Image: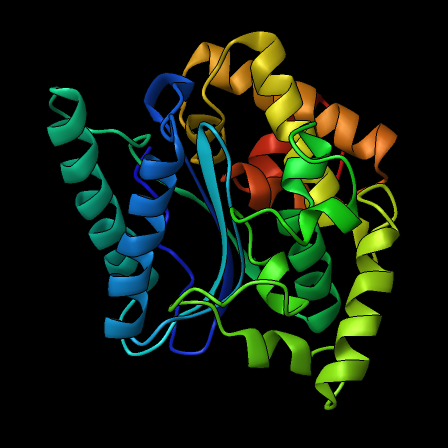
Length: 264
């Protein structure tokens, strides 16, 4: 099945996640994490892209990006090339370091955007790397510390734009942000998109399939079966509508629900 075109335009906000190839660890130490941030710091400003939130985990990278005069695909291609060249030079290897195509979800409203800022910045807490929101203020590998004024912002991180989402006063915005972060990942303001992402990742891990291929509509038996499982659980456990699920899985609503033997 051909890849679907990205829904992109100047000013569109995207949740982007890029994983290590074969889910291998990409960021083995602080030098690797610093190299990834340096690549983002060069590329995003040059491409006119802004960033609301970011997080570097052991085997993946989360970004909430607003595209500028260049499309998202170009931005991510440049980031992947820059970090890949560094990683291969350092570790004496060759080839791709990220999965063949990054994952992406378009952000269409402020409620979802706020949810993603919390979700992305709480990643180290939810993964067990950081103990609490308070401790996250000293953690250098997400954008949260810069938002609360505990660390300088990375060159690509639009701290002012992010705080404006909470309040026009930076002091008030930081208080609102901290209160919002303390709610925890289980209580997002708009839970469905993040919950669906988590469900997709969980099912793909259980079945041993590549979540990127599943979300690109790849027509192989394993990926097709994973989509059926995800759709059934998303409908029964999350109460999501057919259109939401089918868009996330890269297939038409009619095709997906025909396989389920039901109606949308």
